[in-house]
Image (cartoon, rainbow, N blue to C red; front, side, top):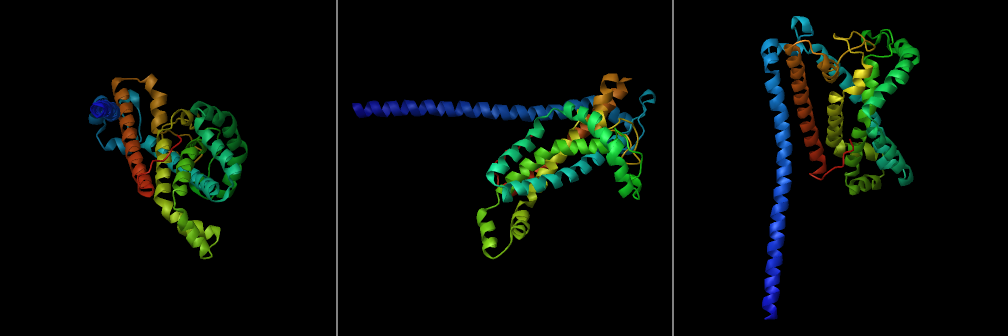
Amino acid sequence: MVALDRDGARARLSNRFRIGDRLFLLITASTALVILLLTFGLFWELTVRSLPAIQHNGGFAFLWNTKWDPPREIFGAGAFIFGTFVTSLSALVIATTLALLVAFYLVEMAPPRVAAPISYMVELLAAIPSVVYGLWGVFVLGSFIRDYFGPAFVAVFGFIPFFNGTPRATGMLTGIIIVSIMILPTIMAVSRDVISAVPRNQREGIVALGATRWEMIRLTVFPYARPGILGASILGLARALGETLAVTLVIGNRVGIPHTIFDPGYTMASAIANQFTEVENDMHRSSLLEVALLLLAITFIVNAIARFLVWRVTGGRRLVIED
């Protein structure tokens, strides 16, 4: 009788946990489905609302036309695309270089009592609001570039036409430096985790053969972590592409292709933020939404590529990405 009671209690307990598991599965799956629906909804809404502009602006001609004249309903995103990729790619080169140096130092060289506070301070940069970066860029960084760094930069690299110009407080260079600082924590955090994922026996094996620390990093760690580092860089690029408020404050916001790195320009995100509240007609609004759709598509593709590259090096293990 006692055995039957125990079996019945065990069966009731098993049924109860089975119901709980199914309920938990239903809740988590529904949440994941909501995320997918939100993403699909963004693409759908932007596509529908920008359809008049897509038909009016001529499809692919919108991508390379640099004239933006709302009163005449002439719209081209070429200048915005140029400014976006110049600022984003330049910032990516600067931030990736610094982030890799910091990540290799933290993982391979720094003692724990030094690595912990440095990691915290670098990741703290990600918590600073964009408007603070923008104001710092306008009042501090911009003045420094105009009065000190800009003239010295022109004196050294002025023989290159794109680097020969009149230093300004607001312009492409200020925007590049601001975006570099903002994406640095993302690239550093992911690169650090990817480098830490390199098997320790690979490090120990090549060191046992007489390799120096630099040779160990160059021959063992870096080749193994290269896909993940590339993925971290592309994640940083995805954030740089969509950075809005700070860039709007420091880039100058002038429609046109910049002739030098000091000239003011526009990015896709700053154009949307700066003009959407002052649209002149329905076609102007629809064209801005077409720019938003293009930016969303680019960011989605860049993030997908980055996640795939990080997955390759980590073997599916989850990384903690501070953003």
